[in-house]
Image 1: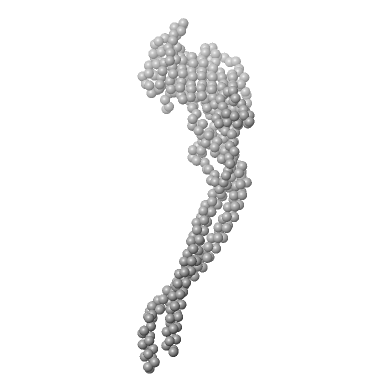
Image 2 (image 1 turned 30 degrees about the vertical axis):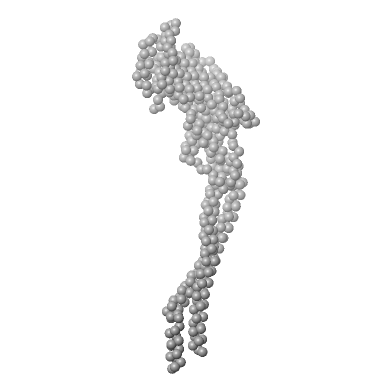
Amino acid sequence: MRLNFTVKNEYLIFSAQVLTILTILFLTKQILIPFIIRTAKLREEINKEQATVALLKQKVSLLSGIEQGTFQQDFENINQAVPHEKNIFSLLSTIDGAAFSSGISMETFSLKPGGISTDSAETRKEKSSNEFNFNLTAAGDINQIRNFITNLFKARRLVSLKKVSFRFKEAEKTKASIEGVTYYLPATSTTISDVQSDLPIFSAHEKKVLEEINGLMTFREASASTFISTPSSTTRNIFSL
Amino acid sequence: MKEINLLLKKKEKFPIPEIQRKRLSRVTFILLSLFFFLLFFTVGYSLVLHFRHSNLLTEQGTLKNIIESKKETEARYISFLQKISFAGKIIEGREDFGGLLSKIQTFIPEGYNPLALSVETGGRVFLSIKFPDTESVDNFLAPIVSDPKVVPNLTVNSLSKDKDDKYSINLEFKSLKKE
């Protein structure tokens, strides 16, 4: 009777151990492994969220910086170089200033037909070109005119020249007829679809362009108008440097 | 004594040897410990991660709200970048007519009187000069013609003589070679 009990007891212990192992294996497969997988996925998700938060923080910091005045000067300079609208006044003051500092006399100035536009007119055909032409004639010696052209080239309001024609006449000032083009870029209604979208950062090229624009001249100091031609003495040595 | 012998005999017939029973107990113990350790560790770690995740989501929401309120600034900044890119293209494409004129000035010897000069985009130059005699024309053209690299694509459009026996020559050429 005692023997039977001992054997039975040992079998019971053995069975319990086997059952425990099987239960552990079962629980591991059914609970522990899925739980570990879920935790690993959560970890991955956190990494992604951390990257997003870092991006958003960077964006907030950049936007706050802009609001506090970083780039303020750059904003102003780029808007002078390429205004939102045609801004004829800015073009005139640039040409006036360039003429004043080079000493030439402006004789005529004209914009191509349809050149002056209001905001409503911008919706018409010229909207896509973002540029408009102007013509002017100037009188002075060749060096003054060359300086005027150089001043226009170095002016912050961006101007490209298409053609420069000189007429050299004895006993008269050299006359130059200049065809140019200037630019504007209306502020596009940028739709920011996703707040999470990455805010573009300056590339080296953009930095270089900005530096170049910041280095361009403004002619605000030119107060005297040169649009009124003044009679002057003639210089004959037309092409001497 | 009989009972003891009987017991020993029976014991020998027991299917699981002592050593294996001990091994089994050890394995059971290790597995059980490992299971509970992993379970507690994973549960604890998961709770920490959940907490962190929820914090991140809250922070993200706050940041998104801030950005949402700064949309105007963002649009201004993007427009600013667009303008830089636009201005960059203009600057790259512009031609320095002033520099070109300086080069043309050095190219025309002193004493010769140009009548007209025209410079166009693409570096095309039209020049009309008056010469007192044919020798001066030759003197002017000889160094240019001898080295076509100095003034590429040179064309003499016309050569005329006026009533005062002075020569006018119309030239067309591409801008002087860049230094």
